[in-house]
Image 1 (spheres, rainbow, N blue to C red):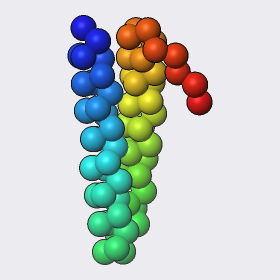
Image 2: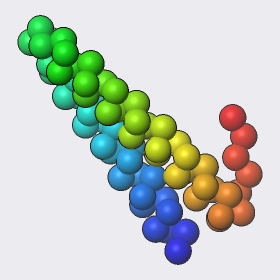
Image 3: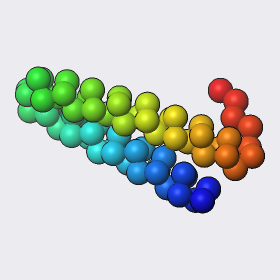
Length: 66
């Protein structure tokens, strides 16, 4: 069960990383509206990953300090 929570958090981290890379590619090409769109998706995925990771750590009995 705990592995599933950590896996979901990892998936969100990977989606955030992909969105960041895609945003950077669009930015380099001068397609700023697409870069902003992908940056916003990256932020959403990153926020979700953080929340899921925090929950996973709480469920696994580890303290989370930030």
